[in-house]
Image (cartoon, rainbow, N blue to C red; front, side):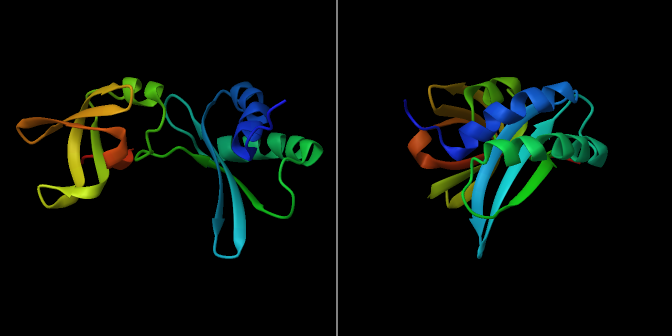
Length: 153
């Protein structure tokens, strides 16, 4: 049997708990920041997530993580809102937010810029199509470092 990554294991434990609390699981990340490790579970729901949602999911998920113990050593556990300017990662994320304002961060500059405010127009097998000003531009997955929703006021 293939061992699942920590984030995949935690997502399996977290999904039913998050759903039971009226939310959806957006993402799970396990990262090192300085000398500390952080396990973050990002949740979402129609109308937005509040602190009570995060607290309820955290309290319900904490004993499950203790029981399954997917991470050797110590870490900080957080349950967070996916946020208004969330990162888009999966094809379903891109499909859900077609037509939305986004920020695309590139590995190499395009027209002198590495961070482009634009509108998401398409996503197909990793190829990103955006409206940048009056032009339509496509970027290959290998060119794109990050895609994030952009809030306009």
